[in-house]
Image 1: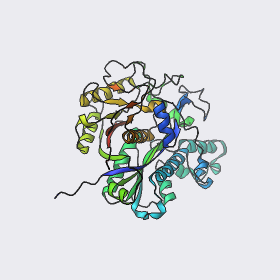
Image 2: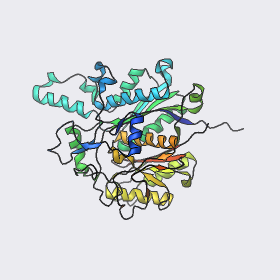
Image 3: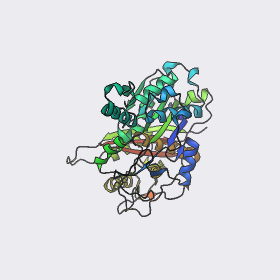
Length: 410
């Protein structure tokens, strides 16, 4: 007799999003179509061509962390630690009651501690090396959030970080699933980024993909005829992952869904004549989940907001699911693209959509561009039977990732 397949599930969600701090606030705002995109407030954006961003404006690190931690770490880590605390509370897990080597941390990050780093480098320029704090050596590091979460909760199992930009929020969840398969009891996983210092903004400008419009309602319009790039943002999500049997044995209050399938690809070199890797990633994730394309109830799109990138994604979705064959949504129009935190937040939204059987909307898009033959969910949530969701993410430089989540009965 064949042994039952172990399922790897999400039992806790913590979010730090521009349109809502905490899962309840984020989900309520997303279903209501409330945006967190506005004029940058952390510094004067007037000298820069990009003036809008998605900031986590209601976040105060001191509400979640002791001062001895906040002075050592950057905002990206503050957000990760706060989201981790929320996720553990949501899952009903007290790390002190679990074996330390049975708990792991896997996060994604792409920008590093820009705000902390800029402050210390400016001190170096103005006052000399004696005025640079010792914590500069660790606070900027893209693995800082994983390290600080591990230290705070005594999680000494396999820990790591993945840096594949937007795709990282899915890649790290797949790495967490791998750790669970190898015997780890519980994993905190997801990603956060915070790149909205002047230095962080300037380093993004050469891509040419950031929207330069000043109207928040017209700045980020994926798949629209007026698409002109994306709005940057900060924040992300952290999830608690366990195997289903362990979660039920400890009496988990809820199971949001199963991480059922995943695949990642890398785009070929420009000029090679080979097709981009996005379709292979999607089809690989469906195959890993053991499902056909017709079983997917909603796609959470990457939705870059760059016309040629949108057209590519729309054509891939039409090729896999048929023209207008599956509802597609991009709630990141209310937050901006959060880099390593973006796909993690999309995954949190997908799990909530499965849990509540409702598809959140895409906002501000008014007219689909020619060739974007997709059933984009616009303006208002769509009540629908949502048992299976696909999340798609593309990272700058050629990374592609796709992940399938589905409902768990019982």
